[in-house]
Length: 140
Image (cartoon, rainbow, N blue to C red; front, side, top):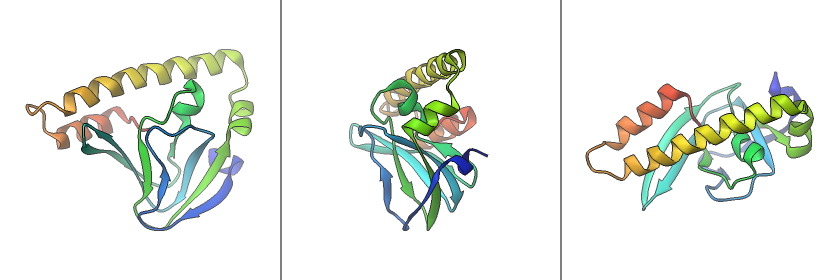
């Protein structure tokens, strides 16, 4: 349903949709294809998840005002709906709902930071970290 509020945009296989550390002005909903969400910490790249149709990403940075916590890239030919900041704000316009979403995003960001720290320890294998993140359904 959220994809109906966005503007269609296509990305080629391997194309970067956004980079970790960049400023957020929009979020995305996958209409077709697959998107990989990944991060780099201390030179180690970790895939957090692969998103399919109807899944969304990039919303946390819009809510919190922080820089992107991960990167997103097209796994194959991808079509997304791009939801800009203004449209997103209208959709979550109720102050109570907005505040709840911001707090939830902040909590997820805190967990993200802890998982990044864990991923650098040799005692935890990176593929297990990816599995944990999929279980939590956590993405950029």
